[in-house]
Image (cartoon, rainbow, N blue to C red; front, side, top):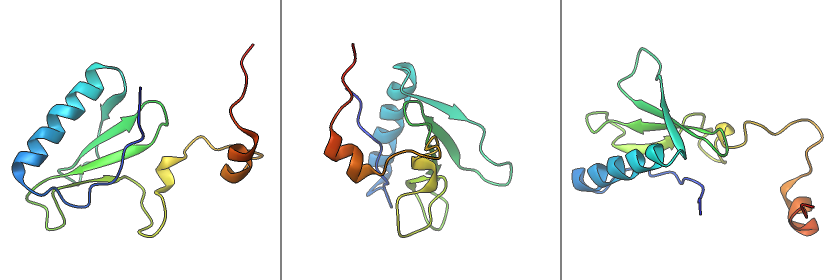
Length: 106
């Protein structure tokens, strides 16, 4: 079973960061994630959540804001734009999808 990733503003310790890296390696090995190239001007590591296509940043421990794990495209108040990269024009709003329930496959 897969669960969506959640933002980690700051890891509580370097040990927690290390456990996260082990977990992410397992996600990659299980085909749930892939590491992608980060922008050249950063020391961050970037990952793609395969099922959603969302991009995430692993902020290093020597960064003034880190260490943390954040959506790559975050507006600071709402869910990061990268969390729904494949929403196409005409997609029903989440509330309507919830009301209709899951799609039956034949």
